[in-house]
Image 1 (cartoon, rainbow, N blue to C red):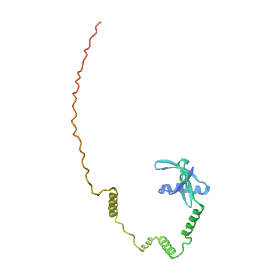
Image 2 (tube, rainbow, N blue to C red):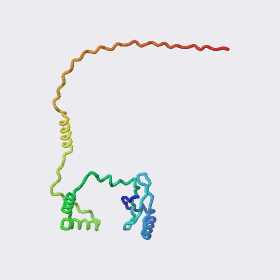
Image 3 (cartoon, rainbow, N blue to C red):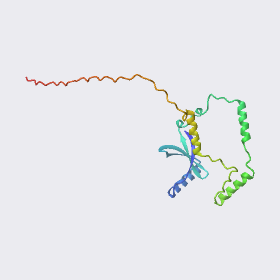
Length: 192
């Protein structure tokens, strides 16, 4: 079995509140996890229940045939040189920002925390300095259609081909249908 994604569980109404709290406290005191059956998309599955903070988390459990083989993802024919790996690490280091300090980070974060604390609406995000380019979808679609027609040669001057002179076909002769007569056989009565 393999452990997959996790989902926080909560009680569904007042009736389920006490069993939920009882299970949560029992798992906490025993320092154990529980295996549970649950229904998902019309199928019965196995799951692992564990505690995280003060909530029960359900982790889906997958059978080995449900999990993809990692070898199927890795392209086996590709080789990577040591120099390419070093260049990738340099790029990662250059793009990494260790300190999220500065007025643009701390001021915005402080405003969000303060709004949540006082249960006020979140501050609006600042408008971008340059407005985004508005794209006319119909114009883009018409242009794409025109390009496709031009690439297929549609819309070009069309000249009719001269017609070939062919001999006139003679009508096919009709064959007379054979007449068949139905022969009926009379039953002779056999008398002994």
